[in-house]
Every structure is written in structure tokens, then in C-alpha cells.
Length: 285
Image 1: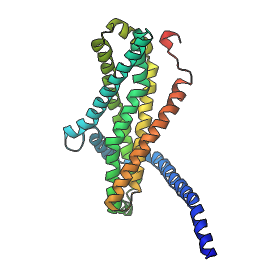
Image 2: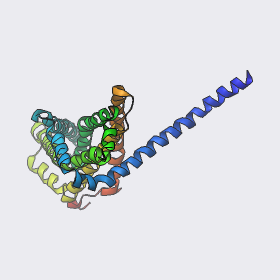
Image 3: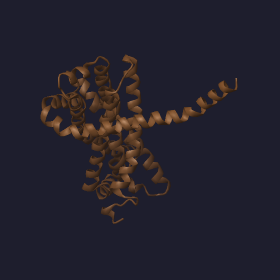
Image 4: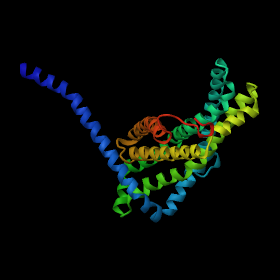
């Protein structure tokens, strides 16, 4: 009886260690796979150009339907409009409390460019494009199609994952620009038209705070987010198991992981690109 009790106690106390070991194993497998994918990108761009172009068309315009492709752009456009509208409302209210509502254009330029637009694009890509990547590659894994590609001497990593990462990088720039434009228009509409702020004052501080470097750094954030989203979702699909239910679970885990990674990277990239102390060169601060 004592031996049984001791064994049960050891098993209970070893569970956290086993769970931690399994988590480290999964992290190591993902990181090593990310390295393999990044190393295979030049090969995918040269060897699988046609497949890369087809993936670009699928990500941008969808599969045989402009309406489906409009979903990617439409989701980014709608999310940017809604988020920037609330940003404009709360910015105007907060500045009205301290009598500084003339600076609403400056805050709109900084917040939309540095934070709102890249994050909205990343979440939209993860929700629509990324989950599609996981489902497609996961379906191929559980049906042994990936093993068949390897048996035919067709390198599955650059063919399936590398081409999708390249397509995401190419497509994120125009989609990001559409979302950024929508956020600018939405915030200005709320502040100037609905709240009656001076359009000249708003535009003056907006252009004063917005510089080319901010647009460049914001685009870099969007590209990094697109690469991370594509890598995470393709990896979960590549290692999916357990039949159709397992593919569904992999898509859910990939979406959670991608959104968490985007949130962490957003903070790190903001500090790395703009520094711990924010600066606005056009205003001398």
C-alpha cells in the first residue's frame, strides 16, 4: 500500500516536469522548422516560381473568386475603419477634457501609423489567410500527400511552406496600404466631420507628425508580422495529426499563437524602431 501511494505521489509531482519538457520539445521543433523554412526561401523563389505566383493570387484574390479575395482586403478595410473610428472618438474626447483637441491630428498620425494599421493587418491575415494555410497543409499531412511529395523527390518544405511565406510577404504591402489609408480617412472623418474640428488644424498637425521614416518603419512591422503569421500557421499545419479533428485543433492553436506572437513583437518592434522615448522630428520633440 505504501509503495502504491509513493508511486502515485511521484507521478503527481512529475506531471509539471513532463508538461514543461513537452512544451520545450514543441518549441524546439517549431524554431528548427522556422530556420529550415527561412533557409529554403531562395530555393522556393527560384525553383517554384509558378507555385509562388499561384499562392500570391490565392492570398490576394482568393480561389477562382474575386469576392473571396475581396474578403481579405475587405476585412482589413472594415477592421481599420472601425478601429480608427473608435481611436478618433476617444482621442477627441480625451483631448477635449484638457483643452488640447487641436492635437488630434498628431495623435491620429502617430497611433494609426505606428500601431493600429500593422496590428490590424496582422490579425486579419492570421484570421483569414493563416487559418487557410493551416487547413490546406494539415489536410495534405493527414492524407499522406506530404509524404508522397517527399517520395517523389519534391522538397515539401519550400514547395508548401516557403512559397506561402513569400506570397504573404508580397501581398501584405498593398493590403497594409489599403488598411492604413482606411484608418487615416476614418479618424479624420470622425474628428473633423462628426466632431466639428478645424480641418486645417487637423491636417497641419497630421502632416507635421507624420514622416517618411514612420511609414517605412510601419511597413517593416507589417512585413515582419506577415512572415510570423505565415510561419506559425504553416508549421502547425505541417505537423498536424489526428485526422480532420486534429487539423481543426491545429488551426485554433495556430491562430492563438500567431495573435500572441504579434502582440509581443509589436511591443518589441516599437521600442526597437522608435526607441523607448518617442520622438516627433517635425515638432522638434
